[in-house]
Image (tube, rainbow, N blue to C red; front, side, top):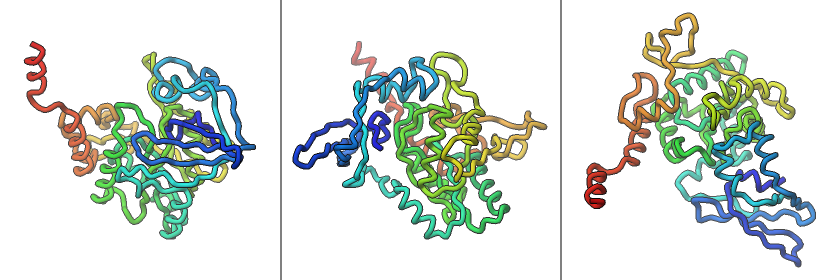
Length: 342
């Protein structure tokens, strides 16, 4: 079923009813892209219903507080009606942004796993650059699967490709950083498939993580790694997290439709100052561990400061520093603006 309100394709919509053909043609123009995707839902299966924004927001996010990133991006100014129907995809989407080779459909992913003779597929979603703590979680998961008797577990590294917050690292930069992680052997290219997950990020916590997990079943995964506060964020108006950090994995353990997916909660990883590397947190020597948040990581890169040795592969860190350098105004530009203003 198509529910245009979901904005999974992040589209603007124009539609035309063709009386002779008897169906509604939806022409979906994608942001940042010159391509069009034509979808043809059966006219008799079309659903049109009122867009109750308040109810939708409350049920999805558990709050109607102002400042929810996806709500402001895609819902607040959306129309008052929703349209749905069974779809036929006439032409695949091409973004022509140099990343289309990573936009693999679920069937293409299943074919790739079969080509690699994978007997287990474990999926890891992220919206941030891969640091060595992430890599530790992924490599340790593969080790655990081998111990369980699997012969060739394959990792699906599945970064989010849709809308993210303005302060998140853009997709093109993240994909370049992920390439360096593979090139430098932090993750094994032979047992890793990197593909873009086209969904936008809703930051809807336990509700959203069910979508993230179920979508990976379609892609052929039978194991899903879930961590602390999946799809979570800080409360937009209060100084606290919006969701309980453990609710996401608890919901996944009981959600309908996930019986075929094995949920793998992972241990917390942090920088071990005693061993100068990312390691699993040990409460018995908590004073030895340093937690480097995404905000802290971005701040270091913006200021051209180096993270602790062993936090991220050098090539991957260089990608981030170069990205933030590209955002900085040229030297002397502030003085020029002051002179013009005077």
